[in-house]
Length: 356
Image 1 (cartoon, helix red, strand yellow):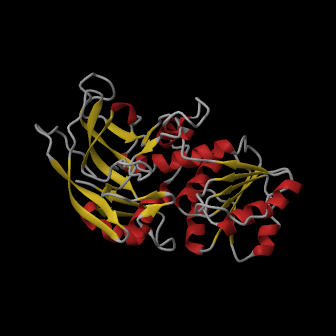
Image 2 (cartoon, rainbow, N blue to C red):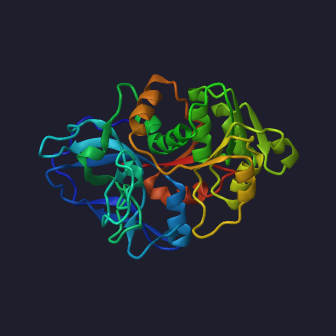
Image 3 (cartoon, rainbow, N blue to C red):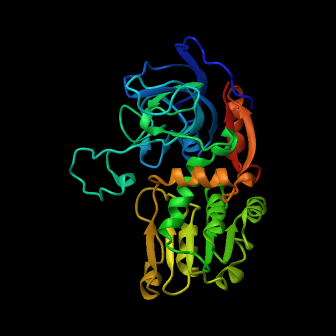
């Protein structure tokens, strides 16, 4: 996609966006372009990646405990070009291609403790396109969006916006592999080869894992995983082969009870299970006795912090190869078709929306 060579003299009052109103009610409609304050910039969005949370808001009107109670602009995986910089001089200048860090950490009401060096765990954290708080945090799936200048990350020289469009989910994967510890020369198992699981494979490969086994319900995602560096792939139905893997580290990215059960059951004694996939709320029936008697380390992984800076550099220097993750691209006017495509794990990996 060719970027505009000149800046618009004036910014529009409204822009085409993708708004969730309720379950099965997502509309392509004009949304206001909010007037920025002194610390905010206006970004012309070029690409946006459809996330599982976007699909949940579309299909169910909720993502986990975050329930739609008012119309909300979807999207948090966005890249674009700064069109109006922050008036206080902070952040990138107009014309700068940027990726967006979608989190705004905050302590909430102060009643819940969290490590100061892990702002992703802050209880008052707001995330673009999330109904966790009310009013909801509006997302980034619009041609123009107003964002805090501190959320913008200038792209390294030579990094294409389309490649950078996977920086946010790749940062989630990067954080998860970091939670696994040093994986150099070790064996790893990834359960679930959707877009996040596939990106975990790419990050594990870059981090030097010696063996990367991937398991999924379908063959098509496994094919993409092989293209990203998996050394072995298995269908989930092949339980005998899976039991023989016994990895040092398992990253559970399916977000399912069977997936977490398989992770606990098949990780080597003394190994570590990184719980990346977000399970449904409430109690879950998983084999905790097995985890205890094998002294497994069960480690949660939630979003990311500043890993996006390392991800952008790795994308730019080519050490993180994510080309096989993106399978489809649609104009924003075809967003409903894009949602249906993204919801089919056999047909698609990461699906991008193109704005403008």
